[in-house]
Amino acid sequence: MIGLTAKQLEHYKNKGYVSPVNALTFSEAKEIRDEIEKIEKNWPSALEGINRNYIHLISPIFNKVCLNKNILDAVQSIIGKNILICGTTLFIKNPNEKGFVSFHQDAKYIGLEPHNWVTVWLAVTDANEQNGCMRMLPGSHKENLKTHEEKFDENNLLTRGQTITNVSLNKTDPIILKAGQISLHHPTIVHGSGLNHSNDRRIGFVIQSYIGDNVDQVIGKMYVQRARGEDKYKHHEYSKIPLELMGKNEVNSQNKANEELAKIFYSGSKKIGKF
Ligand SMILES: O=C(O)CCC(=O)C(=O)O
View 1 (cartoon, rainbow, N blue to C red):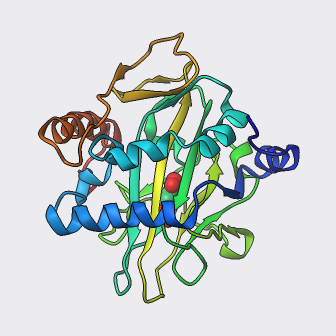
View 2 (cartoon, rainbow, N blue to C red):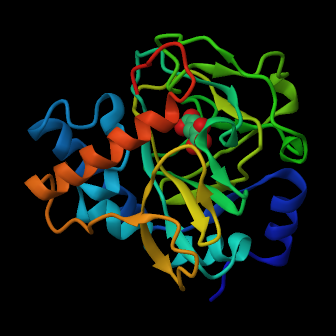
């Protein structure tokens, strides 16, 4: 195992994220983009709304990405050798659309305890300041969970439009990635992203998240897959590994997982959002 260098790990511990980390080749990233565009063409609403989640259950290509050695080595450096995949999400910002992600902390609504987990954001296309890359507030992971206003803005790509207000953009670090590179971020770091002002799509495939086998789901139920090592705690039910793209069993298992996910995302919420 190679994993993160001592310097990268130090950066993660101090700032709450590490980026960029090389993971996939450009052509492997292109294969993912092609898979997304094939799904969009053949099953037009298959990636919409809540269905942007648990993508690795409907596509063998996405499933394979979650098991990529370079990604798992980096994850292992942070959470240890027993690694489960508990979810994936596509964050797509098309040109001429107004999608953005308000500043938030992932741990606020997700119910994964303890925080021995990490989120991997894989750049399927390049991500930069022009096309609305993520921005991290360095060091904010050392603080407690903050108050989030639930705004339900229709262009916000988060479930409730949950927003930490008064974050100064000039104090945040842009996460600039080439297609195939990843960033890794801590459950409590404050982060968000702005509009895509470019002429191409900005696509992130987010493994949200890789969890240690000691991590439980305290709000509801999540379906996991073993990525590496052992699962000594057996807190979760296992999902089926997809054998074909958008097969009946594959779609059923995604639907079942997303039904449970919606209960977690909207637990205690006065309203249900788009995702
Ligand atoms: O893709 C984005 O801009 C934001 C994604 C995000 O918030 C996350 O991966 O936790």
